[in-house]
Image (cartoon, rainbow, N blue to C red):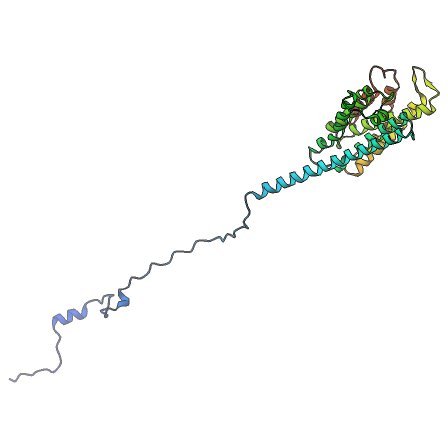
Length: 312
């Protein structure tokens, strides 16, 4: 029997097992330099970034320097205003000194005109000062200088015949230490306490300067009919004090209302000012001049009555 040899290739058991093996995920590829390089880590999620814009650089000294410059400007402004008012007041008194020395005006008339105009001029000048709290102190420098001037000449430490003739009744230096000195003290008091924001100081000064001053001028010329309880006062003088004290007070209140310092109910204001004028007129007519000077009694009583009605 012959042996038949098959030409079909045979597979061994080992090869069959190899063929049946599950393929792996790795492939036998040739290694390269790129494959040896480690992969970078996956990028992290980008956080939300807020872009801040840098503010312009400012020196830490800038606000302080600005406030210091503003304060210095205010001081110079108020000092200049005080100097201007002082120069105006000095020019006013000097003008009446000149007229009195040349006998162009009577001494009694000169004294009362200075009495009227000096206080009204000082009161009308308050708006030129700044709006700071310290402005009133600069304004008070004007009557304070006049106060020192009156003391110096009243004590005869210096001589000024023109000043004495223009503001005294009998031309004696010691008179400067009474009525004129009380006058400037009331100016200082009203400026310090009431200033521009209260009608009380304005009314008090209007009664002392305008009302009392004009009453003396009218009373000397047309005061033949005397008040029964005081033969030194006349009906003409008292009536003129009431009228002019009232009108000047209303005028000053209107002046400061227009400038925005006061806000008044004018119907009630007129009634209140009329009552203050009446009380001040009665006080001025009393025979108390030898005890209390009119430059003290009239403004202080006006101040008390006005404050009780206006409240500020």
